[in-house]
Amino acid sequence: MSANKRKATRKPVASKRWTGRRWHLVLAFWLVCAAVLVVRAVDLQVVEHDFLAHQGDIRNLRVEPLAANRGVIRDRNGRPLAVSTPVVTLWVNPQEAMENQQQWSKLTGNPIIDRAHFARRVKAHPSREFIYLARGLAPEQAESVLSLGVPGIYSLTEYRRYYPAGEVTSHVVGFTNIDEQGQEGVELAFDKQLTGAPGRKKVVRDLLGRVIQDIELIEPARPGEDVTLSLDLRLQYLAYKELMSAVQRFGATGGSVVVLDVKTGEVLAMVNQPGYNPNNRSGINTASLRNRAVTDLFEPGSTVKPFTVAAALEQGMVTPATAINTHPGYLRVGPKTIRDHRDYGVIDVTTVLTKSSNVGTSKLALSMDQQVLPAMLERFGFGQPTGVRFPGESGGVLPIRAKWRDVERAALSYGYGVSVTALQLAQAYAILGNQGRRVPLSMVKVDEAPQGERVIGTDTARAIVDMLETVVGQLGTARRARIPGYQVAGKTGTVHKLTSTGYAEHRYQGIFAGLAPATDPRIAAVVVIDDPDQSAYYGGLVAAPVFSTIVGGALRAMHVPPDKPEGVIAGEPDGEGRT
Image (cartoon, rainbow, N blue to C red; front, side):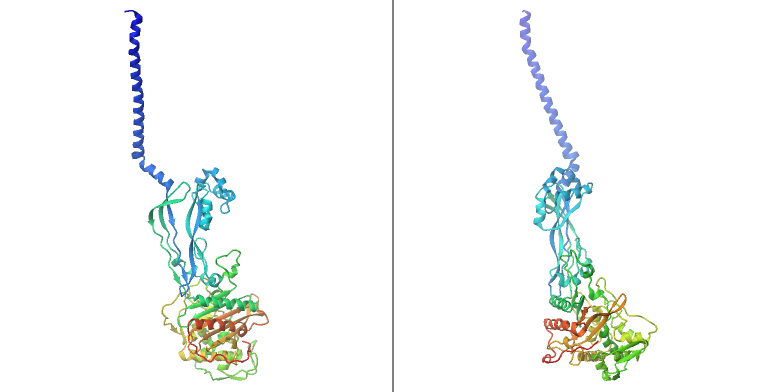
């Protein structure tokens, strides 16, 4: 066989061998690839499963806080005074946002989160994982940002405090900060009780950061406890309206009103001027924030005279009919001359209160042991906090002296040299109206009247109330305090304002403190008009009418039956004596 034929015979065999080897190489390649895939699958599913699952979770699953609803503050009839409404808060993860800066342009011109503001916030803290962007947003406001899909921006639900009665209850209820932490008033005093405990839940978020599924409730949120106040919102509105009207009418710089339930010690109304709106505190004057009725001190003037007379009655020194010579209308005590509005001559103890005689009460005080009157005022609560748990409450000033000068004792008898709050003065009158028993004052609703403790005898308390009725009678200084259908007992006071440089010559505070109905008192109230203008400043002119309207409305709202059905005698003249 020739060589060419042998070559032709071997060529197909070589070709078959190469084809077979090539097929084996391809098969080996795919087997290796399959082996690699199997090994990788085992590595992913077994070896690195926990790590990868965790990484997936932190990119899609998140543990989010569940905001706790703060407790509701209500008035005694269940009307809401402070509630929490859900709002949306936007926050950003700066680390995630920095990795997607090209997406920030979507925020250009956004009214809620502008691109420039967003960039400043993120670049200021690039290594952090949480920064607030905007809080307290309405859902549609938050959605205008979230819908843009900027990586790193997320939302959570919080609560914002809202006060339905606004300025009317602001000084009592107070307010919270943006984190719903109590800052003033009841919100601060009962913050621990009102504050709930936040919970936690596990959620799934999409690539835009929106929650698409709740996975697991880790810990439920515990809402705060509700607080039911002793306030009656109807009376609060009435007191607010009347006080604001009086302050404006008499050109006063401010004022306070306190209304108490004599039997239970509950604060039914407490208002001050000037006020503020707790729902909008931008540009607010900080002086308007304080609750003057419990923080501001003033000398009570002639409203203290009933307690001077009570001390004399308790000592057995006098009776309501005992005669006192006030002639010639003034009394020289040490370096000071004490004066009455005019010479009342010889009058009985009742008329001393009716006419508000400084000379008469001074003579009573000077005839007692020097510690008797200070001790009596202390028993009525002067110089000590009332215990209502209100932040910033003042205890007042009642001097403690081993030896009192005669001029100091005389001044104390008609309300100078001692300082009180409107709430303290109202408590003292409530003791008179409660037959001489002192019950604890309360800002929260009381289910049952407390027993209280005796301060003075029942007969003494009754005698003082009877005498105070004459102050509101035809010959007294407080005829404008009358309430149609009800007997009223009370006392006016007009005092010079005490400033940093001493007593101001032409600046006053007009005061009225009283009880109604006088035959069985249910309401005690104090009205203070601060620094009225010169045309009218006596307590009987500026404060007594406010008392009449407020307490009259309170008695009718509380369905207290009239004790004087015939009403006020028509055509009686209005007059006013210096107090």
